[in-house]
Length: 419
Image (tube, rainbow, N blue to C red; front, top):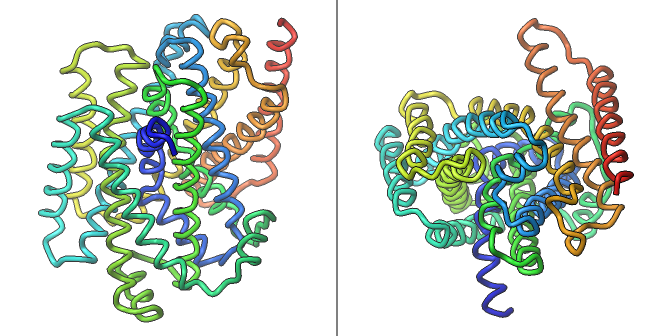
């Protein structure tokens, strides 16, 4: 591979490092432990959807030469729209950071016997040093290393799964939803297509060419998807998942003492890499969406996000509920962001004719929008149902999703007809 392509892959490794956090590990291991290979197709779909949305975002930025915030201003001509996009994602970054630091601490706790408060302080301090130094090259380099560590750790665990290549390929291509798996399947998609990754991708794509962007993005995200699949396969060996220490014990008994060590290494790498990317994404939102040029303001944004994770880390809150709650929050933001991308990428003022995608691509985008909408509406329904202690309403969720898809499809048709 040529040097410029290698540099592009390293640059885009931030994306795969960002979405493979404690949330992905929790969700993928739960999917594997509970439903074996049945939800492997959801990992494949989520990986493809992540590539598509990141490619669309980068295409808009490269073709227009504008920042994400400038694209929103030009595309919608309403100044408050960028705040509607930015604020929920910034809050999401802070919420994710709590799970990231808790996950990194959980990983280290499997490796060394040190008070978790000291581990939290050390992880927060290291992340702060890297973020203070700044620069996409430094952060991309650190992320590339951590992605490789994760890949090795979970690949080693995955090879112990007792499935044939044929069974794995079939499960990857044929969708199945065993009874009770709907929520986990949606969570697998939600933890892979992370809203703040869109802003990271749009920022690092500026100044790149579309061919180089596609190579770096595709390879990086495919590696991330492969790691997620390995995590799910590792989960099939576990048989159950209630906590990381319990999982380490199960893997140690079923595979060997080294398996618990591999889990700790992988979990720490996932948590620490995401503990850097969440504040980094928040700073990019401040500069590219809210268009702040004040370095001190930008630093205050990522410091706030990092400190949020630190406070949760020293509070003694159990990591699993926090991580799963963050995945639900993700469902509120993602459909809105996907909608904006669909409208902007079809706007002639933002995307030049030579950079325009084929008609069928809009069909793919609508499928992804429908899936992300289903995630969001299902999250709302679950939250309300849990609050009032009633069962969920799948028929209502599906009905509302179909109505929303129809409205967006009609709007997209009108936009295309004007050309």
